Image 1 (spheres, rainbow, N blue to C red):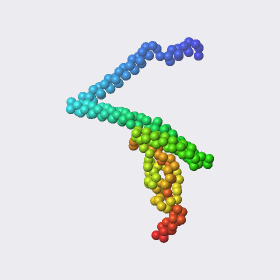
Image 2 (image 1 turned 90 degrees about the vertical axis):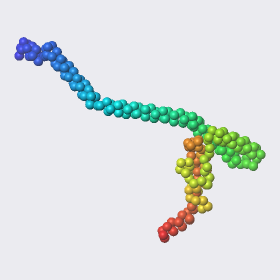
Image 3 (image 1 turned 45 degrees about the vertical axis):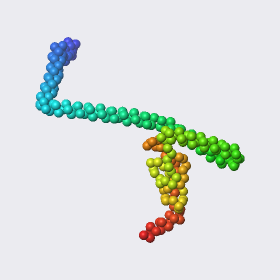
Image 4 (image 1 turned 180 degrees about the vertical axis):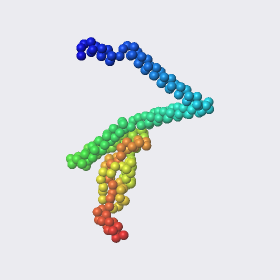
Length: 215
């Protein structure tokens, strides 16, 4: 195949400017027709609604808008109230460590063999008790109260059982030891009480099992 034949074939396979313009116009016309059909469809749907139906549609949209606004208002008020009521929650939770350290210091001093039964120890313990009571008083003024534990039934919402203590004088599950005091801030838990709960002695448990087997 010579150069002239190749040129003729390339000219035939390559679309001319006129052909390209024609295709472009056809595509534009097709898009325009689709857009017009879509507008016509939307107009028909609007025309299908009667004035009463349009009014009901507007009422429904308005009601939904007001409901959403009301929900946002309530959410904002709750967040504002929580910020006011529990704004010092994190600070109060951290401040409980001071009470813990006071109690630990007191326990260490009371168990010191050199200081035991000394006048110096009595004075130190008195001062530690004053500081402890002052802190509890400040907490109470800010609606922070200790959780009752000793002789109370174990409440998973308020107490965390750390150990079991054999005690036949108490009902099983009764708190007989407080390892760490828990606190509430109004109706919110600052931290649970760490406690020891009573359980029946091994002999009593064995007797109960034997009774159950007989029955």
